[in-house]
Length: 408
Image 1 (cartoon, helix red, strand yellow):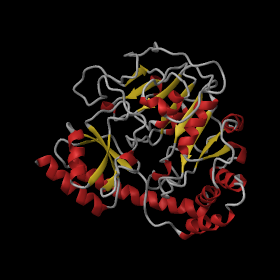
Image 2 (cartoon, helix red, strand yellow):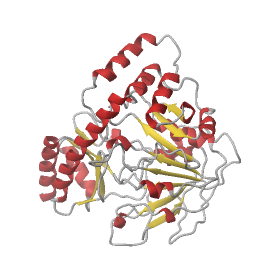
Image 3 (spheres, rainbow, N blue to C red):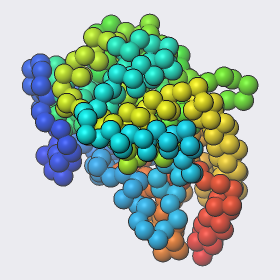
Image 4 (cartoon, one colour):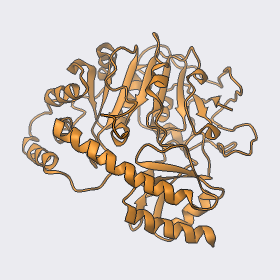
């Protein structure tokens, strides 16, 4: 089956605790199960699929949308659960951050950083909205777009977009991509009347890089198309300049919003800095529900620094090294009995399937290794694990322990 469409209701349990007030504009979101077209329709939060021998989503269990990899990476464990690079910070980034500490008495001025990010992507500054991390962007979208009638999230993917929508009272539908098709996007699986569509590229946790043409095919008048490119800077193709399949520079697609993060490559998760790219009028709507001075002065200094030509060149070199490290990890994983690597990984992590992976994860923790559980992602289940790409020595040590566990 090329994809499954499911309906979900606004949260009534623990997932309702995700931050964000109700939607601020438009009529209230409807409640109750949705009725959708497609090969299979379900109601409620379950992501159950038709019985199949292929690996699929957990039947009858609602994923924990608030769970993230940092919960796995407890002190004392080797962290293969969080996809943040931890190499030493270069001077061209550390120096502006340090200098910004002398300016904390003044209120943040986002204009220089906004101009720098705009220049990097060939856009006017009005088409950039700086945010306190990419996650804030999803909250702003959920708050500002209260009038949308049929929001659709393509899964498996980062769970914060759906969590933010649900917290704001939206009734969310899911398009579940097929593991037997390597989680590839078929644009025809997205309902034609969906007026808000969210998808990641490359997608977390599958590491799939969708063709830009397939994503662009989802854009249309009357629809907001949100592409989460938090990991776009980790991708690369030999002989191809820039980030393959990115839509960050596309200004011709109606309703397009590209979400970007500076967390991953530059190790800035604790600083909280990201940005949105899109039509100025649409970003103005989002800015209207953003708190004043949402991005700190040090975060703005970081945004300016990593938008520079020096930073972009360094980023491309890092992506090339990451590709070699990823190939090594994929090769070692593929040689293990019963382990299947999903698709062709393109980012800083690899998704694998193995029966009993939840028990393997616990055994790894007992041996000092943290990996990301898969059952909290809609469309996956307990037989899936996400593994961060690290240097070959770390990978080899991990594979040695994993092999012993699988052979026990």
